[in-house]
Image 1: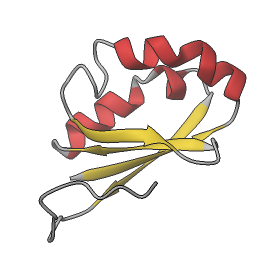
Image 2: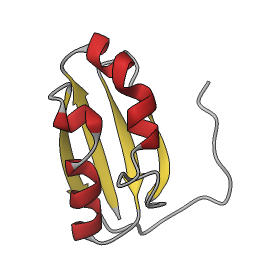
Image 3: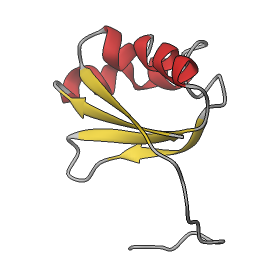
Image 4: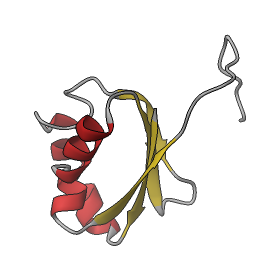
Length: 92
C-alpha cells in the first residue's frame, strides 16, 4: 500500500486542473487505485492512499496533471498496513 503526498506549488494551477486530475483516464482514480484521498488543511497539498503495485502507483502519479504541469510535486511512500479500525473515526 502507498501514501502519495502531493505538495502544491501553485493553487491557481491546481484549481484550474482539478477536473483533469479527477478525470485522467490513466490516473489513480480511473485505475481504481485510490482507497481514500483529500486535501491538506491548510491547503498546501493533498494525500492519497493507494492500493496497487509500485509500478502502477508510479505510472498513475507520473501522468497526473498536477505533476505533469509542475503545479505539484509528489512523494510516494510505501507502507505495510498492520492495524485497521472497522469504521471511520470523525475528527471534526
